[in-house]
Length: 174
Image 1 (cartoon, rainbow, N blue to C red):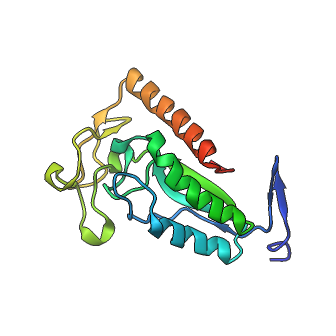
Image 2: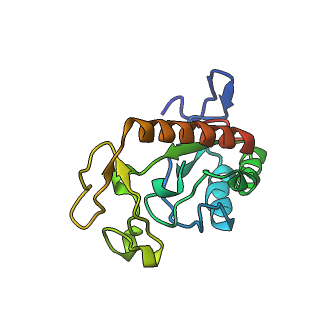
């Protein structure tokens, strides 16, 4: 606790303090787009003085979301709504960060308060759930398709593109 409110420098980033807001699944997006919910939720943590504010797990591919309502950055169209939030966070003296993610075998599932297991396609779910092996996360979850070497390379490339988009939106940590 003695150093909690001291600044911290990591490489070229200076954090005003060591209070870091960890990623929290918010399940509040449509098609992966950040919206006013994210601005208020993340922005209020910056207003509160956190040194670093991280987004929720942000999917690098649409089929890499945990739920259909997860935040994403698989398209350049996602950049500007995210940049709006980043600008606000930075204006408050906090650093904006993004957690890049791919849900793997946990993909295409319900938000916790709506049930458990696979979301049917008719309700916005998807079939192309992939993972390192064809083993379901739990009962009632989708059976993933085991990734091939090419599939792994596609996901690696998606992470690289998502990192580029995060940087373009102004995130300093990803």
